[in-house]
Amino acid sequence: MMDTCLPAEMVDLARRVIDANRAAGLRIALAESCTGGLVSAALTEIPGSSDVFEAGLVTYSNEAKLDLLGVSLDVLETFGAVSIAVAWAMAQGALNKTGADVAVAITGIAGPHGGSEKKPVGTVVFARARKDGDPNEIVADLKNFGDQGRGGVRLQAALCALELLMPDPPVASPAP
Image 1 (cartoon, rainbow, N blue to C red):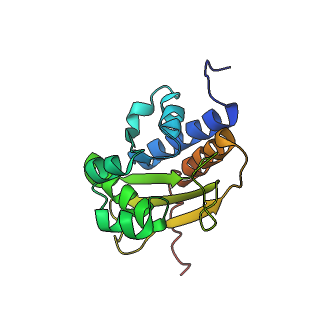
Image 2 (cartoon, rainbow, N blue to C red; image 1 turned 90 degrees about the vertical axis):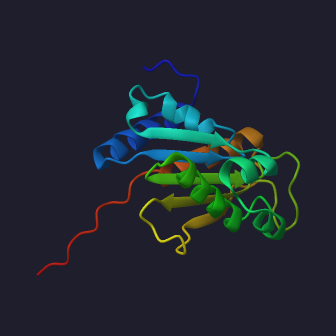
């Protein structure tokens, strides 16, 4: 049994993420907002994670998203912090700032306040950017985990982000 303060399912998934990315020779980074560093904490629970984990940027405020990740003010003002556009810009910013191969961004409304009719509490947006990817091909998803309490939303968002950090399976060559 590993000495950890985090839920076992999160640590187990983090171990799989570290092992899979190590095997694929990939370095990973995070841009976290509503998870407040929870995903980075899970990854760093794993001994030897420094082989794979490059950096985690907790950019909770809009100012931090602007200053640390280079998210544009126009994008923030037009779409709001909890949007596909901002999550994608956060992921791209994390790639640019860290030199990692893959970056995942998380932004959302954990609650209990801050939700609206269009973006209720439990709304979380994820994006994944690859160093060799097409910057015009946006890989992002909006999920609504429902109002399961702040801790519940943050846990579900962290687990989802860890899943997104798993490397893509190699593309099989077509049969001759």
